[in-house]
Image (cartoon, rainbow, N blue to C red; front, top):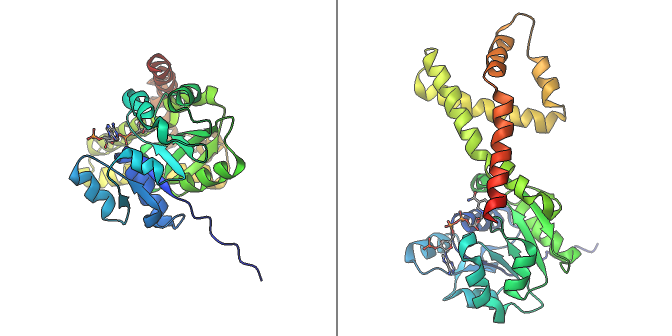
Length: 271
Ligand SMILES: NC(=O)c1ccc[n+]([C@@H]2O[C@H](COP(=O)([O-])OP(=O)(O)OC[C@H]3O[C@@H](n4cnc5c(N)ncnc54)[C@H](OP(=O)(O)O)[C@@H]3O)[C@@H](O)[C@H]2O)c1
């Protein structure tokens, strides 16, 4: 019987920051690539040590990272993406794929600054650090089917991945990239409510976090609409409908919708 050989390629990170670390850790842990096939560089020893401790190869410069990689992930802050891509332009040859996670930087700008035509843009989020990222990708014109498969396998290693047209990326930033912060506030507020109702702080926070995790898993795993799940737990004249009444009076739904719209507009302004 023929056994398909694993697709081994070299992955490099330009910008060895938090997101790069989450992606590299997830990829190495999941076995999509051995850590020895991943490289990066950083001017600070402490960042080099973080990557080195789980087996990532450390090179002397970003240009060496590009030379040594099949897929180059641009993971610097958006403000310096243009400068960095201009510097790396001579090394970004045709056989390489450029993957940008820089928020708000469009494919056409990435192409103009890098001179590279094989590009995929990805918008992950910070739960990548615990393997629960919500990532969305859009393909540049010259990116191939194999590029798509490789990038999907990389980002599936840190969570879930969807594909969408680039015109949706500002709204994606407003929803899934900014969304963890909205949910952190919701968890904190639920815990505060528990404390106000007499619970010890530790227990209230643990229950609030697990309740959000469990509710999200119910939506994903049951395939049911959240409204249906809500109806199933609201008995007539019961406790839950009394709580929901307060949420509706406080404009809970409208406030969440406004948060996503405001963050989307801010992203449009910034890019
Ligand atoms: N955080 C999020 O929720 C999120 C979500 C989606 C997308 N993103 C995008 O992901 C990218 C990285 O974000 P992050 O949170 O990981 O930022 P970060 O932790 O600040 O990482 C950026 C890294 O790049 C390094 N760097 C600075 N100048 C450089 C240069 N010229 N060449 C190479 N490396 C350089 C920085 O080093 P120093 O610290 O020493 O300056 C830092 O280690 C950003 O473009 C962001 O828009 C972030």
